[in-house]
Amino acid sequence: MSDSDTLVEPPPPSAANEPLNEVADRAVQYVCDAVAEGQYDFEGFEDYSDGIVVKNAEGVVVYSNRAHAAAFTPGSTPVGRCCGSYLDPPMARRSELIEQLVLDGVPYVECEHSGFGPDGSVYRVQTHKRSLRKLDTPGFALLAVVRVIERTAVAATGATRAIDLAAACERFRLLSKRDQEICRQTALGVSSRELGEALGMTTRGIELRKQKAFAKLGVAKAVDLARLLVRLQDRGFLDLGV
Image (cartoon, rainbow, N blue to C red; front, side, top):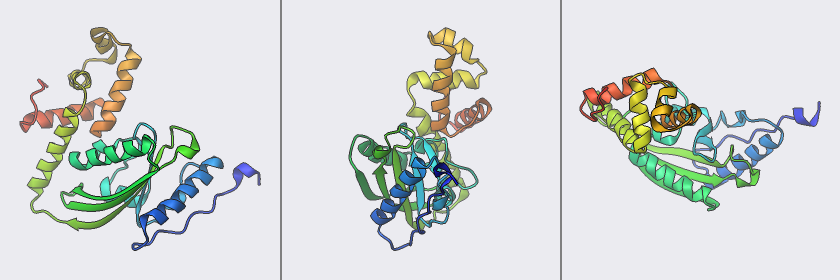
């Protein structure tokens, strides 16, 4: 077996009462060892009870273990998405601010905060976010350990649906005016080439902006975007002319 075929020993699973900084210590070392061996699936985290997330320098999730996906994106995956596309807006903004501190050079940040989860319950979470700058690659910039310490159910599926739409509306409003217009025109069926001509941009430039906007909104393709914007308009959240 060559050195490149050497399997990195997975870290032991986290325990519910283990301090997050100790979990993060092991997790960061495992990621560094795995990347050094050319292993990027991080399977050693799949048995963790805590959520483990790795993000790139743009804040996009490049890895999420089962515990994290089950808590925050049940039935799907957050990989390839920014937290603003799957967390409620206040929680997402706090998460982004914390992550920016780490990306700006703070070695780690540990805190506790609350927000609505995907099922409409109020989640109280403890997070420890740690820099991966030692890897010297923008593809692996930050690791987060996320522990859900309490869920408080709220009544009524109608309220949950309203929360979901309000969160989607807030994510759309946080886009730049140009990205909002690109999304609106895309939902109306305007091609990237036509948008580029109208906005003085290359087709490639339009595609890149669309990709980032789609990630923030939590949609995968133009038809999903159109459905989302129509729902927001039909429920009176926005008037987009779609």
